[in-house]
Image (cartoon, rainbow over all chains, first blue to last red; front, side):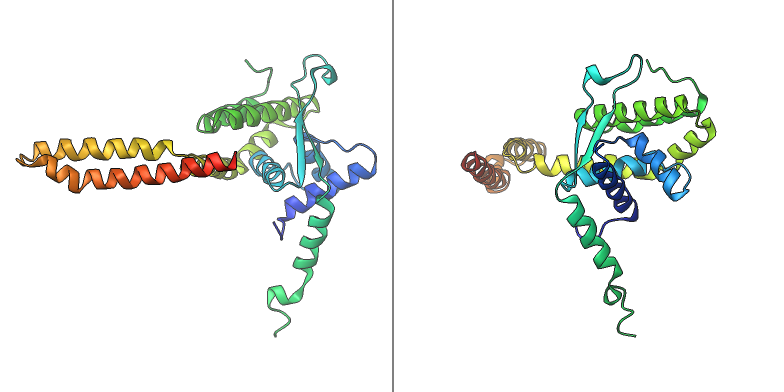
Length: 110
Length: 138
């Protein structure tokens, strides 16, 4: 996976920010809320968000687990918790470098 | 079954149950679990039901491509094992025998041997290769 989709980049960025803040784990709903807050976007489409999380995990950039029963407050469905892997920062930097290169878009030639 | 209250979140949940019905069991359980949690939390913080329904509708295309991708991946993994080729080999022999006998060929055995049997041998050889490769990897 070289060039990431904009939403994939945003998810990794949020994950890395959480890691830096000492709260590495996040979940689908928290990502949707953060994207809404940071980007001022409307609510991310469910299908798009979970497909992106799935893709990032299959690419080895995210790790996930089900929340432990002891962590769950009464009545709340358990969350699928994600955190960025060690490869995430590198992949994000590579993707940004590739999308920022003018030659890739053909602008350098003109 | 769900603790969802609003019309939008219930509709989004209904859609999730519908499309995940076509996914493999582990993928289905995971996606349903994640979406139930998402919708429940959305209701708790007071996200409008219309927005929830909108988010489900806008993601419907991704949901469908997700199911399709999972299925294709699963089928591809299945074709890397010997089982489907053994089954196909048996079916090709049966199909050859069946069709030739209905066509009224007096020498149907000969035709099966030259057609279906040859295919079956090829398929069994492929199954053997895949089986040995899988054993080697283990």
